[in-house]
Amino acid sequence: MTDIRKVTVLGAGVLGSQIAFQTAFTGFDVVSYDIDDKALEAARGRFAGLVDTYRKEVPGADDGSAAATPGRITLTSDLDAAVADADLVIEAIPEILSLKQDTYRRIGSAAPERTIFATNSSTLLPSDLADATGRPDRFLALHFANRVWSSNTAEIMGTERTDPEVYRRVVDFATAIGMVPIELHKEKAGYVLNSLLVPFLNSAATLAAGGYAEPADVDKTWKIATGAPLGPFQILDIIGLTTPYNIMAHGDAASQKLAVWLKENYLDKGKLGVASGEGFYRYTD
Image (tube, rainbow, N blue to C red; front, side, top):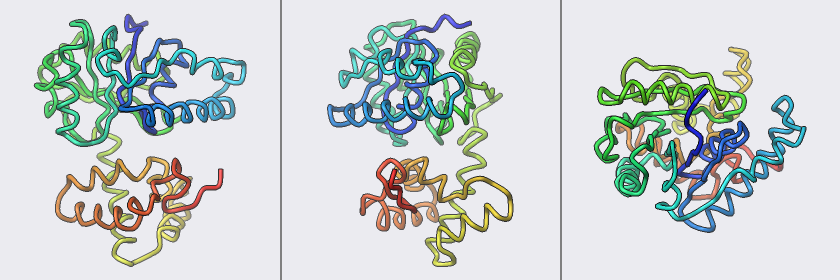
């Protein structure tokens, strides 16, 4: 059981929309925030797509529960209103430190004192953001994997200043929305999942960017040799190429070089991954 009932998700991109939908699907009241009407319209499309996905892939979701889920999600581009009555705010905005810090400064004065703040940041440490929240004792990281309905881990990582009771409440919340809580004992950039995944994806990108092999052949090699269902470039397309780009762009010199390659060959050409219809592969449906 959890005493968290009202949840706000900041950012309605690929993963933010999934977090909002899964939370609403499990019975919570959800506010989904993004910056403007165009972003919110895109979110409506994602929620409609998730209804179909849940009907096909989530046991029992074809009984009307998936179809009813968007009705429990309120969309808004008013940041103050989005957090005004939240028990928990989950931040899922782009991996840009200054942007996240500015957002937390804004919501720190708008959200009630009871509100817990959680970042879904893929690589940043929560201690990098804690002071900006104005409530470091009520702040921690809550990280979801893409395709939350099936890859249902929720990595939970506090700082030295996170109240242990707040930490336990977020663990209980993660369980309540159908996630498997993965509790980290101390801060680690990338948590468990991305500490393994990011170097793997960067290694694949190095092979393609360096002209050693085509992305499809890298994927083919990985799948045949390991029995994995997806190759690294298929995974990148599912994640969406913007997030990996942001991570690479703020990494070391080798990562920044990969970011330039990704931007020039894919992002600048509108090839953003599955969501845009084309990334390393083309998608007709």
